[in-house]
Image (cartoon, rainbow, N blue to C red; front, side, top):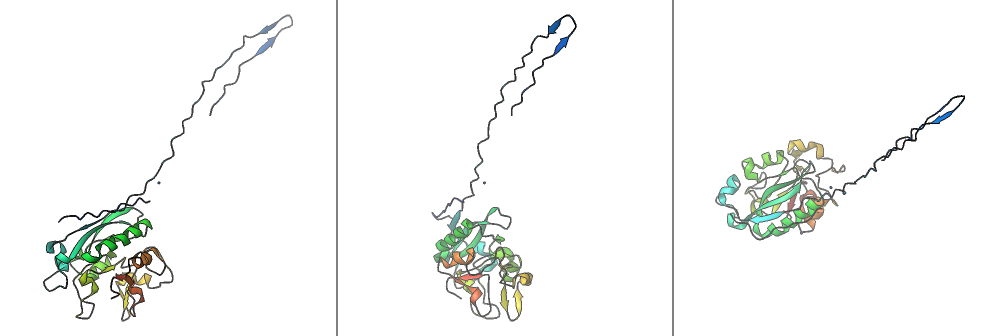
Length: 243
């Protein structure tokens, strides 16, 4: 595997004290005695102010590399509409729900790799939170298991659910983002089931897709379509083709 010459780096951009004089005077009926004066010198106190701290945001890095059939694991098999030569492995910086920067991995079609890097660079600058980013191969090629893990992913050679039609994911031209915060609603089901708390889309919370959010804006900027407008809303789904 070799990395192409694409690396984006975007700067994010976190007394003195005085001693009292001692002077005393005693008196008798015949004489007055004045005690010698005492002078106390207090050393000057120098206060050094520390230089203000400067916090530099971690840079965004996005790399594009070739990918092998072995790396694709159970997400690829003979007969898939796109083979390893037509796919690319991305390493992308993202901000987690912990507020810290992380680096994730995703597989997409070679033709869409550069604009996808641009979209995630925009999300990184906006500090849009992503739970995790791993290839579906890490979940045995199971879309259901990947969704239940709140995983953000791209390529997976599979059919559209309950059909024999290739999903846009099989072409590497679709990405699912934060699958728990952004469920797929179909035939009265919520996929994944853990996403039930996010069926109400009027209460927009961190990590959610909605018109005007950083997530929707980033994909709109590269000309991709949002599945939240489907007849069966697929809020997690963004694709190049609109499918």
